[in-house]
Image (tube, rainbow, N blue to C red; front, side, top):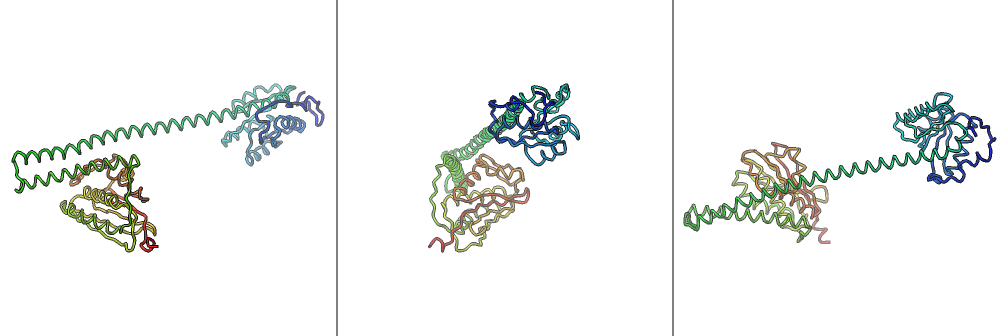
Length: 419
């Protein structure tokens, strides 16, 4: 039976049975389908066919381009079936508009007999398939639309898999770059640590040799100076070994904290007193200020002293003479204590700020009077220790204008502790 010969309510049982018994993967799906056709006879037969093939489909009909444009704008469709010849234009305009608006909908074109060239044009524009209005049209309609829906689903799945593969490849590339970076940093770290150990060890060996062979004698000025150098280098080696051990424990999750209640002002005062002489030796002024009263922190005091000492040592290291370092202790909002170390040193370039707390990183400086030595683990260790206490750590700096490193700790009021 040819669609062009169809009359309303005048079709055989064969036509009504079109699609009956045909199994398809979309039969029970709730689909929004749009049929664009101005011939009521054709619409009637197409609807009957589609209703049998797609039992849960919601089918809308547009009689011309204008209606089709409105409907595709207002509603999302899973498929559009459009006749080429419409009162106000041709059905390809619908496909072209969908393409311009980047609306991805399977599109199937209906053409009259002998319009194969138009069908080819439709396929070139992006139509999924076409049907010629002939005696076989209704018999193949449901299968054609089913094939178009499957083709669309397969294409979407292919795109999804390609995107997933692309994303995984990018993730692998990033992971590979990160591994290369870590490998490079570890190599630099090993070289740096080797150098950091070699220098004081050579000095220790030389100092012991000078005392052993009588070149200098303890009690005399030169001998006492050699002993002081020896003591300083042994202390330096001790700090290096402790950094490596702490880093190993933190990385393995084996760092244990011995917490108790402490006045943060007492911790700041203790560190300031112990570091003041070191700062003075370099010609720097070390001050501290506090606005706190009646509050405590629940911390491992030794570890928080270690963090603050590291920040002050770095400030001394990166502050040329003459300069000033100030430790501040104040409240931050109503729940945290903020301890900061502000210096008048060389500062840090903006692009380096984000990596100062990374493992094995050490921001270099060519500024005279700046002594850059160490493993590059101090700030990474400090960050992890502060975070173990439930706090945060950060830095504010501008190249040539100094830096302010700070960390926060949860605050406890003494009256709260006694309740």
